[in-house]
Image (tube, rainbow, N blue to C red; front, side, top):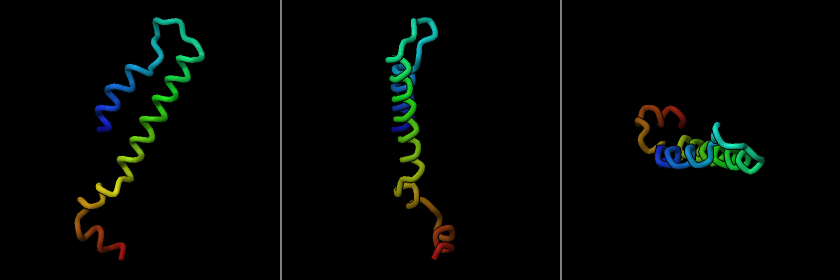
Length: 62
């Protein structure tokens, strides 16, 4: 899901080097960056990732 979001969001929200940039284009770029960073954090901290941890790794925290 994260890879799909990156493939869609980066090209759509990135500031085009050939176009005349304006405040709206920079705001859209920042919205895209914030969205992707939030998705990366969500994937990294997702509880579903923890279920794949080895039993030895999870038993050390008890």
